[in-house]
Amino acid sequence: MIEAENLTKMYNNFKALDGLNLKIEENEVFGFLGPNGAGKTTTISLMMGMLQPTSGSIKIDGIDVAKNPLEIKKMCGYLPENVGFYDNLTAKQNLLYFAEFYKMSKDEATKIIDDLLELVGIAHTADKKVGEYSKGMKQRLGLAQALLNDPKVIFLDEPTSGLDPQGAADFRKIIRNLKKEGKTIFFSPHILSEVREVCETVGIINRGKLIAKGRIEDFKQNVVIVVETDPPLDPSILETFGNVKVKDSQAIVEAERDCRIEISKTLTKNGYTIKELHLTEPSLEEIYLNLVGGGE
Amino acid sequence: MLQKKEFADQITSKRFIAIFVIMLLFTAYSIHQGADAFMRDYRVFVQSGESKPSIIQIFGFLGSFGILTFGAILGLLMGFDLITKEKEFGSLKTLLSHPVFRDQIINGKALGAFLALCLVVVVTRIASLGVLIMKGFVPSFDDLISIAKFGLITLAYLFTFFSIALLPQQPQKTLERLYSSLLAYSFYLV
Image 1 (cartoon, rainbow over the protein chains, first blue to last red):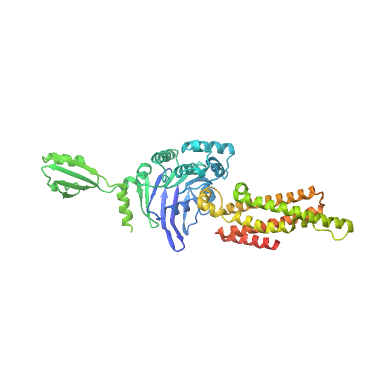
Image 2 (cartoon, chains in turn orange, red; image 1 turned 180 degrees about the vertical axis):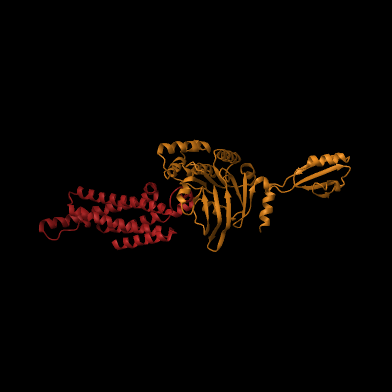
């Protein structure tokens, strides 16, 4: 659905993106991670046709973004970071204004807008001026705005920042429902735990370069199994499962997969009583910090 | 739709209304005086048949001074934060994520402001004609043409100041060229 090839963007002498290659399939929920200033927003702006790349190209649904930005905008929705509206207009008037850029009648637009405001949970304040809105409410309105044209591809730049926990949960639910409707979602999360909840694939960008991409499962590196027995364990009998280290009375096995059942069987066969046997997986955060730290 | 919104935003903004009211009061007062002077001269013309006084006289010194100062202020105030305001509030980015070109936005805004300026000129012209008719002078067709010409020049003057204010907010070179040529043309008219 989205194909970026060798994407480079220079701001004066600063290389915001450096030969980025990225491919996102249709109906994929893609989480785009990276430290501040890594080039996430730049990438999204380029994909939305709001910026011109210095070199390289992007195709969305086979359409070249730089050549046909208007076509792209017709089929994509974008919730920018710190989304802004016209403060002197109400939420509904703001959306009606944006709806004028699509070919829809006023009645049609009104119906769509009412439904969207209901979906994002601000229908009760639809006739209030946006100037009186809180940040979280603006964010909700921003999502409604991004879905106005029933887009095929949706770009969400830190969509849950400024939302209360309930709001963030609502957003994640909406994202999951959009996925069920067959949308492709490009999502730059505010907090890492969201990635695990909504995304299928993840890309990590640092200093304008994609340093890792894959399914979330693929990111899980070796698991660590902690074993404690009575009497204290002779580590050599677990060496078939992986690298074994002894720490105090515990043995720590670094294995490629969860092999607690086999370990348990081996230990019982050798006459050990198991006091503790548990698995620790590295969190996405650890993986992320590892990768981003390693990229420096 | 861009120009419709811009027009509505302009004429409902407090800034616009405040300056417009001052301008209108200024014009009304000076036209009242100018019309008196004009009627005097006109009576002399009818009696003696000497040179016909120009209808533009009714706008008087104060009227043209009012346009000169407040008109310029109005033009500048209408334009100076047209784009930067949208940038600051983030609405420009939201707007640009919908199918619209950057230059369409700027042109739409310029057109909307231009229409608001037209409104200013038309209203002040109608007010002046009203004062004149109230004083018992029915302008001839030629007089109306003169007033219309004066109106067009006023419009060009106001739009010049609007363009000056809008100009530094244009990042794109083609638009800069377009507006500087408009600007040059307006100066030529003035």
